[in-house]
Image (cartoon, helix red, strand yellow):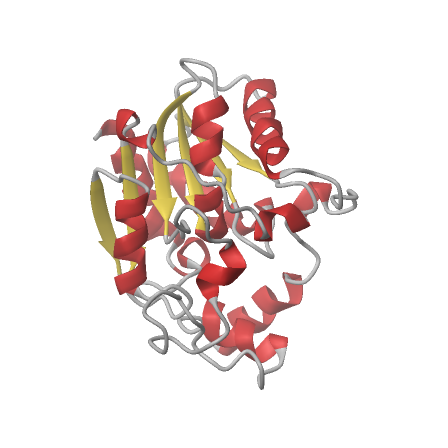
Amino acid sequence: MTDFAFIHGGGQGSWVWDEAIAAMQAQSGGVVRCLALDVPGCGTKHARDTSTIVFADIARELVADIEAGDLRDVLLVGHSQAGTIMPLMAEFAPPGLIRKLISVTCLAPEQGKSLLAKMGNGLHGENEDEVGWPVDPETTVLEDRYLTMFCNDMDKSAAETFLARLRNDKWPPSSYFQRDWRFDHLPAIPSSYVLCLQDTCLPPIWQERFALQLHCDRIVRIDAGHQVMNTRPHGLAEILLAEATG
């Protein structure tokens, strides 16, 4: 058996991985074990009061969830905002728990800069130090922002279904004000980055920068938007299964 653990991005929960996990099970003939984790305040933990949870405790809890699932030698797969928590999980994990990190269109702010500051308030390309947004966050309602960021490669029906599931899941407030990022230990851990070529949330040029920040050994590209696990679940499954042997 090969063990995978999955971490969702911001505003989402473990449910976001359902289609990709089903594709992996089908392609592997059931010889992989997959555990989709929930950050406190998201998915199965959405009712939690997260107002006092410190950022490091999120990482400790997720590591404990993997251990409770009796997984070992895990390929840890994270999406989007999960890029901020995976390095800390790798630092806290006991020997033998995590074998490889796989970042799926993840972001990773530099030391001293919060996630909110890294995203900024302007449009893509307006500030070379900020990721920016595909539409003006000051003049665009949240649903239209989500539609542009997450659903650009979905048909209308799929987009409506996906958008209906958002807004119930929120990472702890500490996630958005954390500034102490540590990456120096990552070169010792095998890692890959899945770059999504159609991503309108994190443009490819930023994904490449974040892959460097996360000390990824290689970049694998896929023709998909930000929600690749939902729009290209079989393609992503192929990549992840290949990473288990590569």
